[in-house]
Length: 169
Image 1: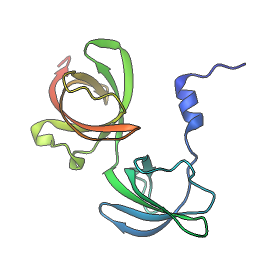
Image 2 (image 1 turned 90 degrees about the horizontal axis):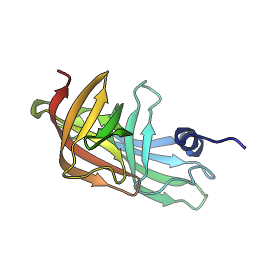
Image 3 (image 1 turned 45 degrees about the horizontal axis):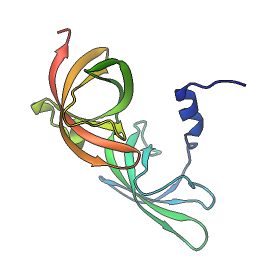
Image 4 (image 1 turned 120 degrees about the vertical axis):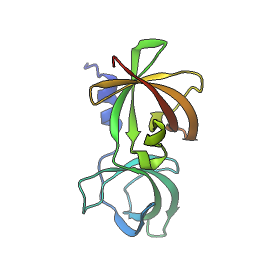
């Protein structure tokens, strides 16, 4: 019997990449058709990584609509949360031993860099309004103060944080 780490289990449970037909596209998202027999794991509120064929940049989206067609295909409406994102490591300031991963979303997706604010896509249950975090990105650590829970679902939370200080600066 082989033991798997939590990352290996998560990777094995991750749905495989799929190609869907895009029926409409806007700055805010996509309308796509999922072929019959694919995407059984989809549900409203599911976070997706989306990569249009004409770009190298991945986007982060969320399923907002899902409708079945008579032939077994499904229409899916995807709202884009951000074009591009950066995986970051987080620690609670009260427990620096325990880490978690999150996606740092570009400033145009809810944060305001001029106000030293950032938006993060977090695992569900991570946001605590009275608990600051330490974020490591690009080999630099920052202290983040929670500002606002923007949205949440069964799998995720999207929140805004204020950058309070650079650690070690």
